[in-house]
Image 1: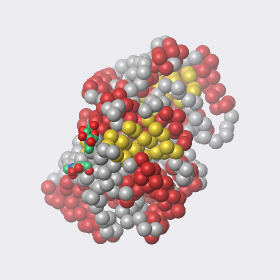
Image 2: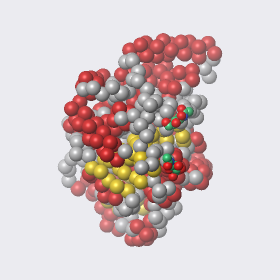
Image 3: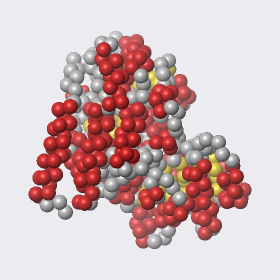
Image 4: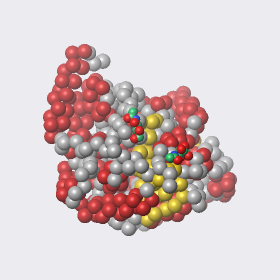
Length: 516
Ligand SMILES: *[C@@H]1O[C@H](CO)[C@@H](O)[C@H](O)[C@H]1NC(C)=O
Ligand SMILES: *[C@@H]1O[C@H](CO)[C@@H](O)[C@H](O)[C@H]1NC(C)=O
C-alpha cells in the first residue's frame, strides 16, 4: 500500500506538474449567468450522428414522449439520422444541418481511416497517438466549417427559441452556440463520471488513483504502476486539455467574434450552472469521491426495446436453439482480414468443442478480401449454428434480454457496456482505443466479465479470443460468480430506468421558459 510519505511525495510531484499545466492554460471564458429565457416547454436536442453518442438522447426523447408529452421536442442533426429520429414519434420534429457533418469532418481530418485503424499499443507512442486522434474526434472541423455550423445552429436557436438546449459533449459547435446565445443548456453523455470529472477529484486523484484514459491499468492501481499512471495521465491531460491540434480552429473562431468559445478543452466543458446527466450507475462504475454540482447519475439511459419476438420473430426462434454468444463490436469497428481470421479460428474451435453453442456475429468488412477466410466455419454457417450478419434489425438490448445470450462480446464502448449491464449478461471486452480500455478494466474490477487478448494488444489471436469466451461460458466457480454478479447489477439497473430520470430533468428545465 501507499504509505503517507509516499502519498505526500506523489501529491507534491503531481501537484507541481498540474500547477505548471494550469499556468499554460488560456484564461477562462466569461460565465453566462444572464441567460435568455426561451419558449416554455420547448427542448432543442443538438446531437451527433454516431449512435454511441446519441443513443442516450434518443432514449431520453422516448421517455419524454411517454411521460412528459407536453414538452415539444426538436432535434437538430445531420440528415443521416432523420429516419431514426422520426421513428421516435410524430411529436418529434427533425431539423437537418446543411454544414459539414461530424463523420465527413472526421474522415477528412483522419484521411478516411476507420476506427479500427486507431487501435493503439499501450506504449508512450501509443498514448501520444491516441491523444492526438482524440483531439480530432472531439472537434474535427476546420475553423470555417466550425463557424458555419455555429451560424446555422444559432439561426435554429433564434427561430425555435427553445427553453432548453440539450447537447452531447462531442458537439462543440453546438456547445459554443448555446453559450454564445446564452441559452439554458444541459448535457446528456454516455460516458461515466470517471471519464469527465477525474481531474476534479480531491488529492489530485485523477492522476494517481484512477486509471488514466486508455491506460488499461487495473483498479485499484498497483503501487508499482502508479508512477506510470501519473505520466500517462499527464500525457492525456496535455493532449485533451491543451489540444495543440485544435489551436488553429479555436483561434479562427475567436478571431471571428465568438466570445464564449471553449472549443479546446475536453475536461472543461462542464459548468456548475449546466446540468450534466450521465448514465453512471454507482454499482457499475469505479468509486468516485467527488461529484460536482448539477451532475446527475441516472443509471443506464437505454431505450425501451419491444421484445425480440415482436421485432424479428425468426431470429427470436433461432435464439431458442441453444446458448448463444453475441459478437457486436459496434458500428465504428470493422474487421480487416487479420481480425476476421482471428475470430474465425476462435469460433471454429468453440463451435467444435461446445455442441449446443451458437454464435451471432455482427460483421462488417474493412477493405477488400476474399470470403474464403470463412472456410473454417463454413459448415457451421451452413448448418445455422453460426450466423454472420452485417446488420441487426433489433438493437442489442432486445437480443440480450431474451436470456439466451450467455456472453456478450463488445469493444468496450460505453453504449455497449450499458446494454450489457442493463441486461445482466457477462461481458468479453476487446478494447481498441481510448476509453474502451477503461471499460475493459472496469468489467474486470466488477467481476462481470473479462478482457480478451490483453497479451497481444491491440491485436487478437484465435487462442486468446477462444480462451476469453470460454472463460465466461464455463461452469467454473469464477464464471458462475461472474454471471451472478452481472445479473445482480442488471436487476439494480432495471429497477429505475435512466431514461426516465434524464427525461424528468429535461422536462423540468424545459418548464422554466416564457409563455407567448
Ligand atoms: C444547476 O443548473 C441550473 C440551470 O442552469 C441552475 O439554475 C442552478 O442554480 C444550478 N445549480 C447549482 C448548484 O449551481
Ligand atoms: C411553463 O411550463 C411549466 C410546466 O408545464 C409550468 O409549470 C410553468 O408555470 C410554465 N411557465 C409559464 C411562465 O407559464
